[in-house]
Length: 223
Length: 92
Figure 1 (cartoon, each protein chain N blue to C red):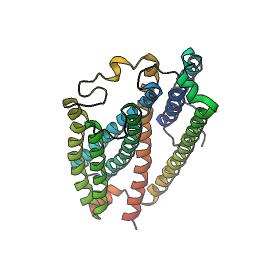
Figure 2 (cartoon, rainbow over the protein chains, first blue to last red):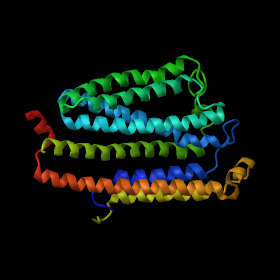
Figure 3 (cartoon, each protein chain N blue to C red):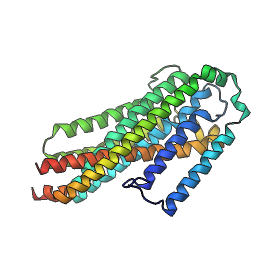
């Protein structure tokens, strides 16, 4: 065991290797249209789950910053958003590739696809906003408020709107979710660890980004 | 740098080792012999992709562990030399 490395980081490494190898090498159910592309369920979907959890964590830290005024909370919120946006962009790319194979084109103007793209642009705007303000305390307050607003817009756009309109995504627009027809037992033993592994990887990356930001800030304050 | 494994970490690694064993058992599934799978795995191209991905993840994790340890060490050094950022900010 390496000193200074928390136990959950070892677990994250193990889960990610398990997801990678089992997800690519183990058999999957034979499904029309989806065929082997169903393996994307172990990468695309957990990335989105992880991203949503990371954004939830970021919201928590922004609210805590507004309540207590600790700069560490603002730094954590920003680090979580950076990783969540990275996961979101990776999720968009893997989703587009999946859409090309199963729905016929890279972009289908599906409400969830469009909502996800708008959501990513919103959070990119959050990062631009942070970069535009020099004063550390003011930046933290403005960014925390923006984060709360963006999350309140983002969640309905991803989880509510696609259920109210026609959508190609499973579980939206009257379509059955993966759970109800083709996520069989052999997939569950990879899917759930994959969700856990991707989420932990996100928190680990955010933790490293936070430590860097924290050190930069301390050095800035102390010359 | 080396610590003795705790009871919990032993449990986690045992559980993961057992999970890994189940992978080898399921790899013998006859459903692998389909045309799609044959095409995907023809000429070992598929396994090359898997190997490349494993390499990428190995590099990523190595870098991540290295960064994590390095930043922890820097934080420890700074803690002994500089005051806390939050207190500094409030005073300002």
